[in-house]
View 1 (cartoon, rainbow, N blue to C red):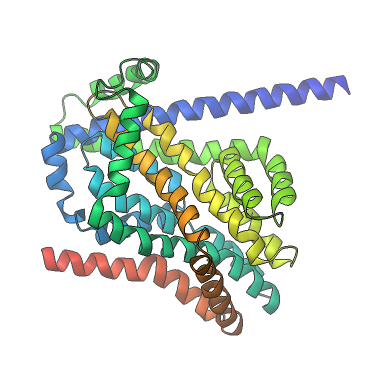
View 2: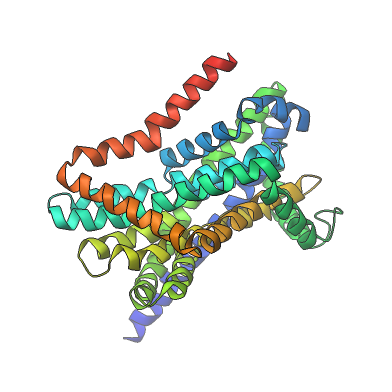
Length: 383
């Protein structure tokens, strides 16, 4: 018995060591993207020119949606966006991208619901519970993107909070030195390796390495955390769902922080709805908490940034958090808005359960075909 306990403690210690190491890899990766993008684009002006095509907010939204749908991780996409902002991508261009990441991340739990397709009633319940998250995130964009385009309130609020946290514009002097000290050597080694290459090629290679490392680190952080946390997460989920909206939102946030994946959180809830254990209305607040919990990765990534653009990296991470918190307060807080995702998901689930092809058309259309058409039309117009 004691031998087994000692073995389990050693195993857990190794898993936690792996998690800490992967968090370090994430921080290094963000530093690589920041340095590489700065190098490849020639600083802020070059970055603005490079992303001039995305200054149309709708195109930024679509890029965020498609990128997240393809890699199935909003944490990965928002961490990359943090790195790009640190490298000179304008925050105004990045705001619609993080909104799009929220839409793209909902594809995973919608795909999970297809596992219930054999049983008509079960599928209707599962598909409704999965797509209520989609409808909420789409409605959130409809409400907040026009307001952001008109007033830039998220960008301004994010900057105010970032400066508050960092003590004004004398950036990354105190609390962020530690991050710089532990990540700079590795970033420096990669810089030395690509030093003799042409500037754009060297910068591009650093960005590609950074994105690859972010993808790997977040994938492995998720896998390792599942080993030690999913049992705990399931217990929180079972205890909290159906006990009111505050409990649901809070537990959704906590579970997502524990497993570092909003897709995992919402996907855990879908089978519970499919089996009839909980209704879509019960699951709904839990998925909103997942939106808030997933912001922690971008906030963590922002701590890896030092220098003049550090405040902007923190700003976009805080914009993501503000956007998700405000979405819950406004849409879930106003009764008639709260009902729209429930009505939309129920109607869609009814059609999808009658005609299974509807589910496939919906997934391909919303996450790939419509965004792809927008990108094609936009590039044809600008080209």
